[in-house]
Length: 202
Image (cartoon, rainbow, N blue to C red):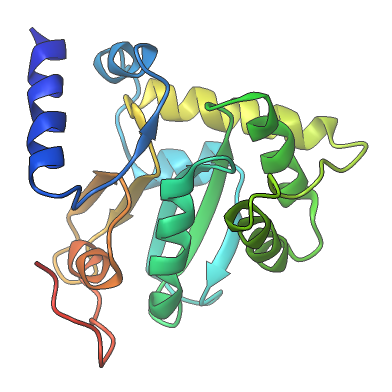
């Protein structure tokens, strides 16, 4: 019964103009969603996942994002999050789902001395059709970390990327979201201020 409901949800999203966009590894993605065995929590992610920080290093507001380096919707969320970096600490957690390059590129980002700059360069290459950054050498520990990140995401039941986990800045409630969204919608999801000059979330 779960799979038809998911299909109807996707159809509705398409009809609404893809307000949310996400990548998945169908058909296994739907099975992974149903098989989540680890409760979603920021504490579990902080304890088990390995990522890199983009945003306010000292902020008490932490937003965790599972992403695949080959995912175009993750690239959209990367850009959408930039105007909010002064309000929160975004921890980007690479996973390997979409293809063979996913793990090696995610590991290369983790191994970088400046992962934010490396991510910007990677996304610029992807946008230009270059395929992204080249894999670094001697990154086996980082590849292992990406594999563990992927396993954690799957155990938590997330079927698509990007997947967001955070605590609402105003209410303290746990918030989760699968899919990219514009900056204003992301700010509303997280309880952050919508930056001046941006259109209100629909």
